[in-house]
Length: 250
Length: 242
Image (cartoon, rainbow over all chains, first blue to last red; front, side, top):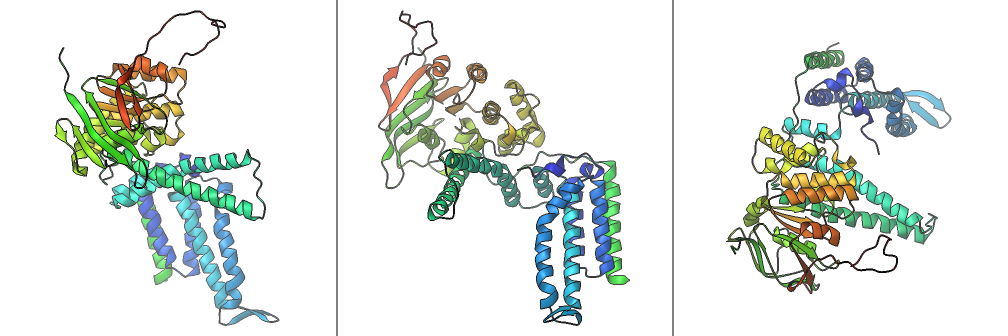
């Protein structure tokens, strides 16, 4: 499990204050999500690619991470064009592809890819704990920040536990087959993971209480000023204004 | 002889889970300032439960807990107890829940109301004391087992406790780390209680060794560690006497 591979770079984007990146990404997401004009969407895609380029993301990893949403989009392309009512575009026998259906698919696809790439460039370039601290500084509720950080921390522990159990099954010659025994074994595996996770949650909570935890989250992280912060602000503001003009004014 | 004051005293404590047997049964246990007590007892005899009851994490069915001269009953009473008594958990992964070492060590001091600067200061001093200088930005879940144990100890020591309860501190450590841990513990000016199964560890750290049986601590059967010399076959091979 290596979710942090984008976080280890040293590009311009990596050095920009995480809070600005977070706010920028959310602002871009809102504008792109409510836009339907193709010029706007293509500009948004171009901007996201520019951000990815600035963040020096590895192209192959970007594509690999886009596979899951692309799979989802293919599903849309398989269903929407013929099931959506409207002016016909192409007719093959019984199947009629409609123009509005295809337009909608294209809009959704462009939005999805543009936003995914933007988030990879701006948010995936920070570690999860940096994200947590940035959210905390942006006055995000303590409870949610603590939950995010602790989930991230114990994901690894639970994964290790899962692997241990899997090994224990393997060394006793467990081979998954399509039978009740296999299903039951997997059910046990999942069950025991839940039991262990809840036991651990209880112990961790105990450990936190022992050290005076009362629900308040303190962040030690200092986000130091960087000359690029201003430039980044300008770039994001400029992009937002450009997208808004393309969508609503032109 | 001057008897040092009692810092923690458990009187007639009973504890059990609903529907189960009593794990602690009429247990009496007292810690005086400066004590170094080892607890040796079979698995499942309630040693960890005893620690958790003392910290107020588990509520006893009956009995009284007196810490630092006051009876502690409610959750609010234990806030002070937890500040002055540190508990080192058996599994370091339970203790280290923050992403980085510095975050984790500073967590306690911050909760005690220290400013960020003071907390970082205490954390760094504690890490230095344990020979963990430069560990500040390490990611907790990527530390080795021995490092995790020492960082856990740092998180507890950073709260500047007066009493330290250690749940199997030496289990699973290699010889060098164990040696280091023993040196650290012996240099601390605190009251210590260890749970351990390792006699060689206890012989180097504890003054008294108690056992537990039927949910009680046996004072009358205090164990004494001693060395003796004798000759026997294969004596040149490394071996153990238990």
